[in-house]
Length: 291
Image (cartoon, rainbow, N blue to C red):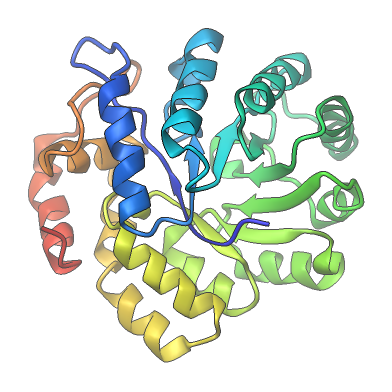
């Protein structure tokens, strides 16, 4: 249902941490104008852990209203509380999101059966298209291929963001689940290869900084044009790595501020980027031919 370069959008904030809705609207327009294929609002990169529920829904609403149907909006609505995930997903559907992205429950370490029942319960409670999100490096919870395939039989579970960077696992999901679920990369460094093997897109941090180049690279990879995809991806590799020199979204928010696209705020416990990395990120931006 959703293909191509899907930006995991940052949430702009003022220096005091207040949400900057004016800049958020400008970012949405920036992505529409530069070819981004879908926007993920309030995912991990959007600092969802530090937004309260009212702010969470307000950001989704502002992104949906600004997009005005010109680009799909996927709302991050995951939680380690099934009840809270249902409430956030209901809010996203109410304000007009096209789909929801739900991270595996973090900290409480559910079993595979617990994961299955968590997602099944949300899908049955809210009839919006839903995308699973597996990122064990952050959640300490790794969803198995078997569990993913079980969930793929639920009609409104339409995709999975597989952020492990494990291409063998991604291929196994494609082989075993077939066309019941679409597989998206959640790891920019390996996204090209995942799409060349049949993945449908990349939910991307790099796309915040290089939306046009990421759109073109994803289109080439999805179409099977390895030569063109590799050519485009080569200039982006520095960003794929440099935007993770400190915890995401610290580097990408600094990069966007340095480019003049957002205000400088970030919320604790995240902190501003260490000055030692300024040069590395600026060089990566330069190598990607971004002005």
